[in-house]
Amino acid sequence: MKTKQLPKVAVLLAAYNGEKYIQEQIESIVNQVDVDIYIYISIDASTDRTLEICEKLQKIYKNIFIINESKERFGSAGKNFYYLIKNVDFEEFDFIALSDQDDIWKPAKLFVAFSS
Image (cartoon, rainbow, N blue to C red):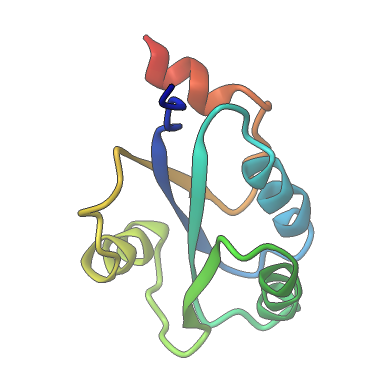
């Protein structure tokens, strides 16, 4: 009997000086139910502890990838998301989701969205 594979989802997270919410946000994404999550984070030249918090979580969760470590200044969330879209390979994913740095997700957010 084959086991049903969960939908594979790339979550693109654009962050800038987001230390106040970033840990709770990432944990809410990691804890999504009935989906296989991979989080790609781009941090826009933050001056707070955003990068440090993301690096700590990356060590705990093997499905978190930081692809810009505060080295580039984008100046807007739109440009930061564009950077993510250009630099993440989506070929193996079923779905893509975007998350701003202060979004806290309910556990079934993606499952409900993709089941519609």
